[in-house]
Image (cartoon, rainbow, N blue to C red):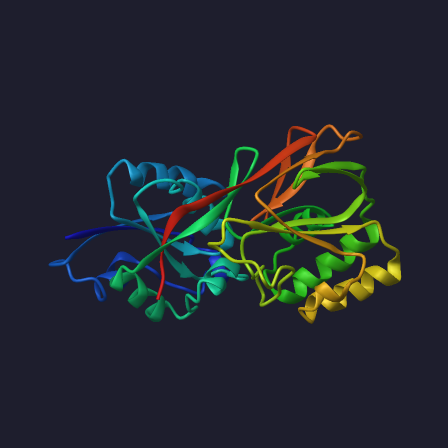
Amino acid sequence: MTYIHFIVNPISGKGKHSITKEFLEHYFPETDFRLEIDYSNYKKHAIDLTKKAISQKPDIIVACGGDGTISEIASQLVNTNIKLGIIPVGSGNGLASNLDIPKNITQAIEIIKKQKSVAIDSGRVNQHCFFSNMGLGIDAMIIKKYESTEKRTLSAYVNASLKASSQYKPQKAILRYNGKEHFVDPFLLFISNSNEMGYNMSLTPKASLSDGYLDMLYVPRIGFLEKMFFGGLVVAKQCEKFKKAEHAMIQSLSAELPDRIFTDVQIDGEYHRLETNKIQVDILPKSLNVLVA
């Protein structure tokens, strides 16, 4: 008998889903499956629920939510034998899209029932794991403004991007990666494990979840017209055409912001203020087992 523990964010995707134990029992007969279900009610609640679920030794823990919920749950499953299942009911769904997990709940459930898994890489920034991407610079400000809005739509994300673009002031940074040191003032520093950042957009279209590398995109301080041009290229999935952008494959990176006390970052689409001006980013190869089609 397979023990599957579901952790559901009831407000993901504007709460338009109704994933209940009664609903799930239609798909998972009790002769073959043991089901448990918990509901997350606030930010980081899914972390506590996952820790509790792990103590009950499930075979699979299924994250039902958006990228933030999935990241909270997956962070507790790194370097364990417990498989992660995903039912993507959020707004962006970047990781699920990269894994070809459909937004249709019934189709996502069928993937879970087949129990086919692959090992993917994880990223880590200081003590936080990430699975899609992380960023600092304007990327963090965009997410901070996006989280302050009630809507979780592409138009809300674009609006947050425009506001951040007009307000963000680059900070001096010292970057160390691939054996070199760089003194920069980044408009954007984006580090990705996935080729999808949500809403069918990508800054790193060639990134792979299982190649043992993170994809880094760095954009220096740029003027207003260049910001608008770069934004258009992002929407068109052609950011590699922006000549001032630098791309690198990395396994680790350190960054120091000498003029700051704290560091604002986004991690898998969630805003964080780190109580340090130094960050360390590393790859954790093949550290998470995920159910896929």
